[in-house]
Image 1 (cartoon, rainbow, N blue to C red):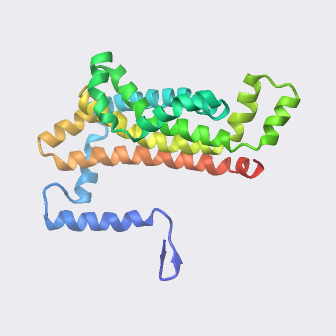
Image 2 (image 1 turned 90 degrees about the vertical axis):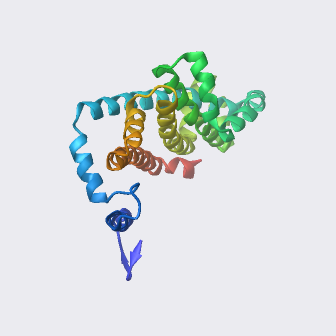
Image 3 (image 1 turned 120 degrees about the vertical axis):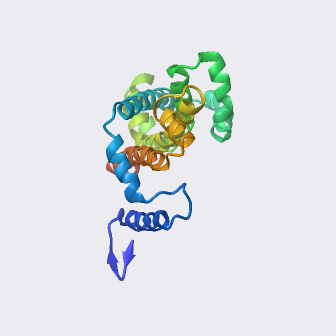
Length: 250
Protein backbone atom coordinates (compact mmCIF):
# COMPACT_ATOMS: atom_id res chain seq x y z
CA UNK A 1 0.00 0.00 0.00
CA UNK A 2 1.30 3.45 -0.97
CA UNK A 3 0.47 6.71 0.82
CA UNK A 4 1.71 9.99 -0.71
CA UNK A 5 4.18 8.01 -2.80
CA UNK A 6 5.65 6.09 0.16
CA UNK A 7 5.47 2.31 0.26
CA UNK A 8 4.03 1.12 3.58
CA UNK A 9 4.36 -2.40 5.01
CA UNK A 10 1.64 -4.84 4.04
CA UNK A 11 0.24 -5.00 7.58
CA UNK A 12 -0.14 -1.22 7.86
CA UNK A 13 -3.71 -1.34 6.59
CA UNK A 14 -4.66 -3.15 9.80
CA UNK A 15 -3.73 -0.01 11.72
CA UNK A 16 -6.30 1.97 9.74
CA UNK A 17 -8.97 -0.63 10.37
CA UNK A 18 -8.02 -0.70 14.06
CA UNK A 19 -8.45 3.07 14.30
CA UNK A 20 -11.82 2.83 12.57
CA UNK A 21 -12.85 0.03 14.95
CA UNK A 22 -11.89 2.17 17.94
CA UNK A 23 -13.86 5.15 16.63
CA UNK A 24 -16.99 3.07 15.99
CA UNK A 25 -16.71 1.45 19.43
CA UNK A 26 -16.23 4.78 21.20
CA UNK A 27 -19.20 6.26 19.35
CA UNK A 28 -21.46 3.60 20.89
CA UNK A 29 -23.29 2.93 17.65
CA UNK A 30 -23.92 -0.71 18.61
CA UNK A 31 -23.20 -2.86 21.65
CA UNK A 32 -21.97 -5.57 19.30
CA UNK A 33 -18.78 -3.63 18.51
CA UNK A 34 -16.92 -2.54 21.66
CA UNK A 35 -13.80 -0.36 21.35
CA UNK A 36 -10.69 -2.18 20.17
CA UNK A 37 -8.75 -1.03 23.24
CA UNK A 38 -11.35 -2.69 25.47
CA UNK A 39 -11.15 -5.91 23.44
CA UNK A 40 -7.36 -5.98 23.73
CA UNK A 41 -7.53 -5.33 27.47
CA UNK A 42 -10.02 -8.18 27.81
CA UNK A 43 -7.78 -10.46 25.75
CA UNK A 44 -4.85 -9.68 28.03
CA UNK A 45 -6.94 -10.54 31.10
CA UNK A 46 -8.32 -13.87 29.83
CA UNK A 47 -5.47 -15.24 27.73
CA UNK A 48 -3.77 -16.97 30.65
CA UNK A 49 -6.85 -18.26 32.44
CA UNK A 50 -7.39 -22.04 32.77
CA UNK A 51 -10.61 -21.87 30.75
CA UNK A 52 -8.88 -20.14 27.85
CA UNK A 53 -5.88 -22.47 27.89
CA UNK A 54 -8.17 -25.50 27.92
CA UNK A 55 -10.18 -24.07 25.03
CA UNK A 56 -7.13 -23.33 22.91
CA UNK A 57 -5.64 -26.78 23.58
CA UNK A 58 -8.87 -28.55 22.58
CA UNK A 59 -9.24 -26.41 19.46
CA UNK A 60 -5.58 -26.84 18.48
CA UNK A 61 -5.79 -30.62 18.89
CA UNK A 62 -8.91 -30.95 16.73
CA UNK A 63 -7.47 -28.56 14.14
CA UNK A 64 -4.06 -30.24 13.90
CA UNK A 65 -5.52 -33.72 13.67
CA UNK A 66 -8.10 -32.65 11.09
CA UNK A 67 -5.49 -30.96 8.91
CA UNK A 68 -3.12 -33.91 9.30
CA UNK A 69 -5.67 -36.39 7.98
CA UNK A 70 -6.75 -34.00 5.22
CA UNK A 71 -3.14 -33.79 4.00
CA UNK A 72 -2.34 -37.47 4.57
CA UNK A 73 -5.39 -38.57 2.56
CA UNK A 74 -5.82 -35.64 0.19
CA UNK A 75 -2.32 -35.36 -1.28
CA UNK A 76 -1.91 -39.05 -2.27
CA UNK A 77 -5.48 -39.17 -3.56
CA UNK A 78 -4.97 -36.06 -5.69
CA UNK A 79 -1.69 -37.37 -7.09
CA UNK A 80 -3.25 -40.71 -7.97
CA UNK A 81 -6.20 -38.97 -9.62
CA UNK A 82 -3.78 -36.90 -11.68
CA UNK A 83 -1.95 -40.00 -12.91
CA UNK A 84 -4.80 -42.54 -13.22
CA UNK A 85 -7.60 -41.70 -15.62
CA UNK A 86 -10.07 -44.29 -14.34
CA UNK A 87 -9.65 -43.18 -10.73
CA UNK A 88 -9.96 -39.56 -11.80
CA UNK A 89 -13.24 -40.21 -13.60
CA UNK A 90 -14.59 -42.11 -10.60
CA UNK A 91 -13.65 -39.60 -7.90
CA UNK A 92 -13.62 -36.16 -9.54
CA UNK A 93 -17.43 -35.69 -9.61
CA UNK A 94 -17.65 -36.52 -5.90
CA UNK A 95 -14.76 -34.22 -5.03
CA UNK A 96 -16.43 -31.35 -6.88
CA UNK A 97 -19.76 -32.09 -5.21
CA UNK A 98 -18.32 -32.05 -1.69
CA UNK A 99 -16.21 -28.98 -2.43
CA UNK A 100 -19.25 -26.95 -3.51
CA UNK A 101 -21.82 -28.48 -1.14
CA UNK A 102 -22.68 -26.88 2.24
CA UNK A 103 -20.78 -29.30 4.47
CA UNK A 104 -22.53 -28.00 7.58
CA UNK A 105 -25.54 -30.03 6.48
CA UNK A 106 -23.49 -33.20 6.98
CA UNK A 107 -22.80 -32.47 10.65
CA UNK A 108 -26.00 -34.21 11.91
CA UNK A 109 -25.01 -37.30 9.90
CA UNK A 110 -21.54 -37.31 11.45
CA UNK A 111 -23.09 -36.96 14.90
CA UNK A 112 -25.21 -40.06 14.29
CA UNK A 113 -22.32 -42.08 12.86
CA UNK A 114 -19.49 -41.05 15.19
CA UNK A 115 -21.15 -39.60 18.27
CA UNK A 116 -20.82 -36.22 19.95
CA UNK A 117 -17.15 -36.33 20.86
CA UNK A 118 -13.84 -35.13 19.51
CA UNK A 119 -13.82 -37.75 16.72
CA UNK A 120 -16.75 -36.08 14.95
CA UNK A 121 -15.12 -32.65 15.28
CA UNK A 122 -11.88 -33.96 13.73
CA UNK A 123 -13.78 -35.59 10.87
CA UNK A 124 -15.70 -32.34 10.27
CA UNK A 125 -12.42 -30.41 10.14
CA UNK A 126 -10.97 -32.94 7.71
CA UNK A 127 -13.99 -32.74 5.43
CA UNK A 128 -13.74 -28.97 5.23
CA UNK A 129 -10.07 -29.08 4.20
CA UNK A 130 -9.53 -32.22 2.15
CA UNK A 131 -11.36 -31.48 -1.11
CA UNK A 132 -9.37 -28.41 -2.18
CA UNK A 133 -6.16 -30.28 -1.29
CA UNK A 134 -7.19 -33.15 -3.56
CA UNK A 135 -8.02 -30.82 -6.46
CA UNK A 136 -4.80 -28.82 -6.17
CA UNK A 137 -2.67 -31.96 -5.92
CA UNK A 138 -4.43 -33.35 -8.98
CA UNK A 139 -3.89 -30.11 -10.90
CA UNK A 140 -0.19 -30.05 -9.98
CA UNK A 141 0.39 -33.58 -11.22
CA UNK A 142 -1.48 -32.99 -14.48
CA UNK A 143 0.85 -30.06 -15.25
CA UNK A 144 4.07 -32.07 -14.80
CA UNK A 145 6.38 -31.97 -17.79
CA UNK A 146 6.06 -35.23 -19.67
CA UNK A 147 9.85 -35.49 -19.93
CA UNK A 148 10.10 -36.02 -16.17
CA UNK A 149 7.73 -38.99 -16.39
CA UNK A 150 9.58 -40.41 -19.40
CA UNK A 151 12.88 -40.03 -17.55
CA UNK A 152 11.53 -41.95 -14.56
CA UNK A 153 10.27 -44.72 -16.84
CA UNK A 154 13.56 -44.93 -18.73
CA UNK A 155 15.47 -45.40 -15.48
CA UNK A 156 13.10 -48.16 -14.42
CA UNK A 157 11.50 -46.27 -11.53
CA UNK A 158 8.84 -48.21 -9.68
CA UNK A 159 5.39 -46.62 -9.21
CA UNK A 160 6.30 -45.82 -5.61
CA UNK A 161 9.61 -44.23 -6.65
CA UNK A 162 7.88 -42.14 -9.30
CA UNK A 163 5.20 -41.14 -6.78
CA UNK A 164 7.68 -40.03 -4.11
CA UNK A 165 10.56 -38.67 -6.21
CA UNK A 166 8.81 -37.22 -9.27
CA UNK A 167 5.11 -36.49 -8.90
CA UNK A 168 5.13 -35.15 -5.35
CA UNK A 169 8.08 -32.78 -5.76
CA UNK A 170 7.06 -31.53 -9.21
CA UNK A 171 3.53 -30.80 -7.98
CA UNK A 172 4.68 -29.31 -4.67
CA UNK A 173 3.81 -25.65 -5.45
CA UNK A 174 0.19 -26.54 -6.21
CA UNK A 175 0.05 -28.94 -3.26
CA UNK A 176 1.17 -26.20 -0.87
CA UNK A 177 -1.39 -23.85 -2.39
CA UNK A 178 -4.13 -26.38 -1.75
CA UNK A 179 -2.91 -26.98 1.80
CA UNK A 180 -2.93 -23.24 2.50
CA UNK A 181 -6.53 -22.87 1.35
CA UNK A 182 -7.46 -26.11 3.12
CA UNK A 183 -6.04 -24.80 6.40
CA UNK A 184 -8.25 -21.73 6.15
CA UNK A 185 -11.28 -23.92 5.50
CA UNK A 186 -10.25 -26.18 8.39
CA UNK A 187 -10.50 -23.24 10.80
CA UNK A 188 -14.15 -22.88 9.84
CA UNK A 189 -14.64 -26.62 10.13
CA UNK A 190 -13.25 -26.93 13.64
CA UNK A 191 -15.34 -24.03 14.96
CA UNK A 192 -18.51 -25.33 13.31
CA UNK A 193 -17.81 -28.75 14.80
CA UNK A 194 -17.29 -27.28 18.26
CA UNK A 195 -20.48 -25.25 18.01
CA UNK A 196 -22.79 -27.91 16.56
CA UNK A 197 -21.40 -31.25 17.69
CA UNK A 198 -19.85 -30.78 21.10
CA UNK A 199 -19.65 -27.44 22.88
CA UNK A 200 -15.93 -27.50 23.65
CA UNK A 201 -12.88 -25.37 22.91
CA UNK A 202 -13.36 -22.01 21.27
CA UNK A 203 -16.90 -23.04 20.35
CA UNK A 204 -17.78 -23.23 24.04
CA UNK A 205 -16.30 -19.77 24.64
CA UNK A 206 -18.21 -18.29 21.70
CA UNK A 207 -21.42 -19.85 23.00
CA UNK A 208 -20.80 -18.60 26.55
CA UNK A 209 -19.82 -15.05 25.64
CA UNK A 210 -22.54 -14.50 23.03
CA UNK A 211 -25.26 -15.89 25.32
CA UNK A 212 -24.20 -13.49 28.09
CA UNK A 213 -23.59 -10.53 25.72
CA UNK A 214 -19.92 -10.32 26.70
CA UNK A 215 -18.95 -8.86 23.37
CA UNK A 216 -15.44 -7.74 24.33
CA UNK A 217 -14.69 -11.34 25.39
CA UNK A 218 -16.29 -12.62 22.18
CA UNK A 219 -14.14 -10.40 19.97
CA UNK A 220 -11.02 -11.20 22.00
CA UNK A 221 -11.40 -14.92 21.26
CA UNK A 222 -12.22 -14.15 17.62
CA UNK A 223 -9.02 -12.11 17.26
CA UNK A 224 -6.98 -15.03 18.60
CA UNK A 225 -8.66 -17.38 16.11
CA UNK A 226 -8.06 -15.01 13.19
CA UNK A 227 -4.44 -14.50 14.25
CA UNK A 228 -3.82 -18.25 14.35
CA UNK A 229 -5.35 -18.79 10.90
CA UNK A 230 -3.48 -15.83 9.41
CA UNK A 231 -0.14 -16.92 10.85
CA UNK A 232 -0.46 -20.46 9.51
CA UNK A 233 -1.64 -19.19 6.12
CA UNK A 234 1.30 -16.77 5.82
CA UNK A 235 3.78 -19.48 6.81
CA UNK A 236 2.45 -21.77 4.09
CA UNK A 237 2.55 -18.87 1.61
CA UNK A 238 6.20 -18.40 2.53
CA UNK A 239 6.83 -22.09 1.79
CA UNK A 240 5.06 -21.68 -1.54
CA UNK A 241 7.45 -18.90 -2.51
CA UNK A 242 10.44 -20.97 -1.41
CA UNK A 243 9.53 -23.87 -3.72
CA UNK A 244 8.32 -21.72 -6.61
CA UNK A 245 11.40 -22.68 -8.64
CA UNK A 246 9.87 -26.13 -9.15
CA UNK A 247 7.27 -24.53 -11.38
CA UNK A 248 9.99 -22.89 -13.50
CA UNK A 249 11.89 -26.16 -13.85
CA UNK A 250 8.68 -27.97 -14.72
